[in-house]
Amino acid sequence: MAKALAAKSAARGPKQAASSAESTSDRSPMVRHEAVRDRFVVSKARFEAVMQAAKQSGLLTEKSGRIGGRVSPALVRQAKRQTGIQTDTDLIEFALATVALEDNFADVFQKSRGKVDPELKLGF
Image: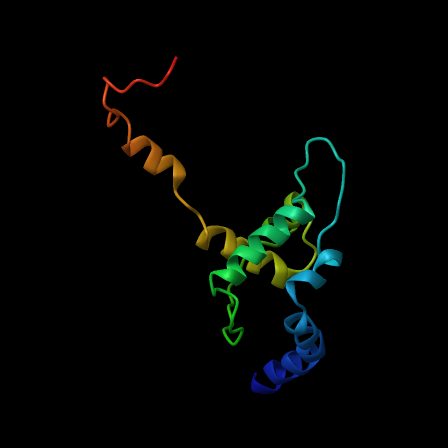
């Protein structure tokens, strides 16, 4: 078992090293651009904006963590299809950054319901 894990790690080594050495600006080949009906593909601009915001928030400073888990291959294929992201690493990083940067606008907006003074003149 240990030999199999070591073999897998060795086989993945150069690919992961190249992936972790990429900067946010080098990610353009990772995102496909498609004009397909009934399919949402994350634009390069959105991908770049999310990753830049995550970088500026200090969420991408250290890449020493490792994540693992069993997921449905169909889920991964569909997520890649929906986003246009081609690599598993970029898909996971984008998904986690999107969740980490969520601003909960809908919840905050709903909680503010009825809090505006009814006497406030809005100009219309």
